[in-house]
Amino acid sequence: MNILIVFAHPEARSFNGALKDVAVDTLSKAGHDVVVSDLYAMGFHPATGAGDFTGRRADPEVLSIAAEQTHAVENGTLSPDIAAEQKKVLAADLVVFQFPIWWFSMPSILKGWVDRVFARGFAYLPGRKYDTGMLAGRRAMLSLTTGTSRDTYMPDGIDGAINDILWPIHNGILRYTGFDVLPPFVAYMPGRISAEERKAQLDAYRDHIGSFETLPPLFFHPLSDYGPDERLKPGVVARSGFQKNPE
Image (cartoon, rainbow, N blue to C red; front, side, top):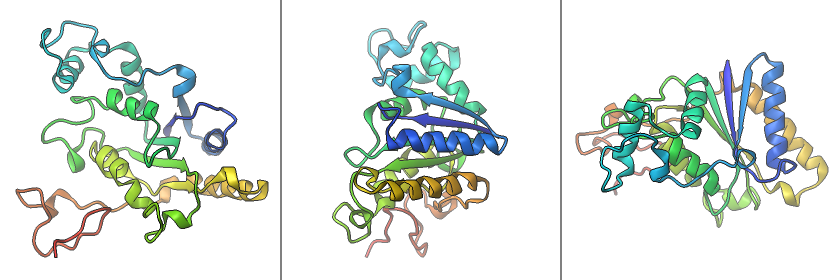
C-alpha cells in the first residue's frame, strides 16, 4: 500500500521524530511504499491567501478562499506546493499525521497544511462531505504526543477525554472529507518519563502502526442517522465524540 506520513515537528530528533522513524521502518519492512512530508524541513507555508492561486481568479476584486479554491481546483491553478501535497494524498491508501498536541490541537503548520491542501473542490463540496467526502476510500490515523499524563486526558481528567479533544480533527477534518479514521496512537508526556518507558511507547507504536490494516475504524454516525435538520433522528442513541442526545 501507499502510505503518506505528514510530520509536523520542528526537531527531527524529538520523540515525534522517533515515532515517525518507527512508522517508516515498520511500514517499509512490511512492503509498503512510504512518503514523508516533513513540513518544517520543507518550509511549508501554512497561511492560506491569494498566493495559493496562480491563474486568473474567479473574482479579482474580493478574495473568497472557498470560491477561489474551487475555481483553482477546476482549472488546475493551485500553487505548486499545494498541488504536490494533493498528489501525495490522492496516491495514499493511508495518511498518518504525526504531531505534538499544542494548545489542545495540532501545530499551526499542520493546520495550515489542512487549510491549503484539503481545498474546497478537492476534499469536499456541498453534498460531498462525511460519508460522501471526496477522499473516501482512504484511511487516516493520528499519532501524537502530549505534554501531560494519561490521567489528565481521562474522562474525569483536567484536560478532558483524549477522544473528545481529538473530535474536531477526527470528525471535523478527516471524517468530513471522507476518510475512514483509525484509532489514534497517543504517547503521553514522553519528555517526562524514563528511557525505558519511552522505548516501551515506541514498541507499542510499532505494534499499532504495523496492524493498521486490521484496526477497526472509529465509529461515526452514518448520514442515514440524521434527519433533514442534520440532527440525529429521534431514537438514535448518540455514540460518537462530543455528540449527546438532548435531555
